[in-house]
Image (cartoon, rainbow over all chains, first blue to last red; front, side, top):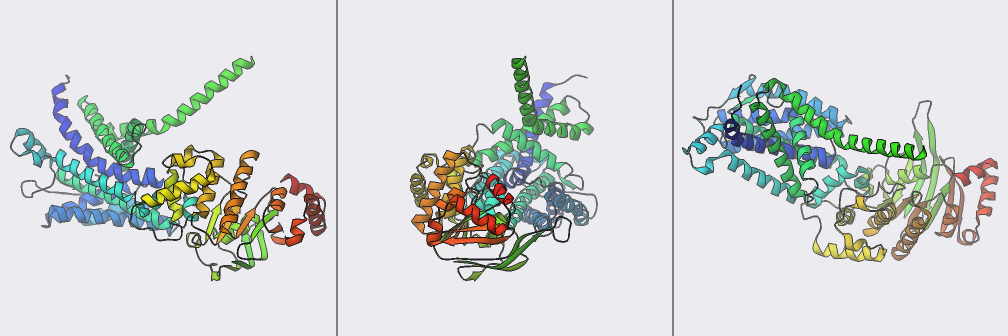
Length: 316
Length: 264
């Protein structure tokens, strides 16, 4: 069992383009987790929803752009449903997300008609595809077909748009809703409306990401969203831990989150290259997220223990 | 300006913990009147303020602000008329947002929030000016996160936010109780000057009898969900803590309540 370093290098462009696609999902997770202060589990369902809608529409002769647009709207709707469950029906945010996610499982199966649908890259001009990545690398296609370039443009455009939106009066009121709900209400902000809006935008990003991934890998699968929320969280947390101290600006923080997703995927490629059984990937992801989430808590605890010890020794 | 008619609020209705916090309470507040509200723990002071602000619906009665019946309006809609400062300094501001962002949110209280940019240049100048009036040096730190400010600074900022867009009614819920005496005095001073400058109709709940007597044009005391003392004009001006306690003792019919009130 020998490890060929050039194999790893060869896989990096793939990791980069996948990481960037998941970066869009991570931006969606950032909106709920960091801005709205809600752990929204709709993500697993809406990611697959985006993929399913996109692939099925392309198969039915719609253009890639229109298909992605519909994936986006499907995500908006998924967020709307979770938002209504949470605000109007008074269901806790986590449970509301789980319920939508569960329901979406059936919806996604209904959209695809079966557990997976594939699109042949030979028959369609897709926006991004693993094949294009390889062909650009081989010199068979011009550079602007490269998924890395296309998705980077997507990311930059999304970051710019969200930077603008969250700087507007409406965007500020969404941020206030997540930052301090009592204050938001006292300042006349309709917090329910803002939560719904935030959930919609978040899930639209997630579905868009799902639509791009299904094109990239050439199929949509009912299981493609499984654990997506955890991957998104991993990207958000990695991004915030690494860049949190440097990046204060909102746009840069979003950039940090996308970079977090890329780092996450590079790490995954590396452990796969080290011949880790892929079955353990989700376990590894869960452990990474636990580690990063527990870190600040444990650090404070350890610090308080050492203070206590010092006090005890001073008394003795 | 404000009229409360026979409001009743029952918490935990039909359970063993049922508590009637407000009992057919009525109060009317003239335009520009500044009422201080005192009362022991559980007398219904905060409940009254929250009922006015719409934090929860009342079981009976009506709340009318400036001729508009707001009884059925949700909290965020009533906010168009009401400026509020809470006891907890953390509650009135968003820690993760900048000073100017917090002010900008308050500046649009009661207005539709559009897709226009959150803070304009002229607004920023305006915020700078009003912060300067506070005299805390916050105008130098417009973009600082509010989480970095002290409790007193945050409370002063909350006051500013509550009055930035002139409210028809200002509700102060023990807003100096969580501060150290010196900071509390400073915040109270700012409170008084803002109320005087804008002639704000105000309800200020306080635990401090001296403050209650020294400030405002009218004083009410709540006991068991009712207004038991209501003084204004000369009566209010000649009031002392001793007199107030004696009055309260004769109304509640026990001396024990005095200690409770003092200690609370």
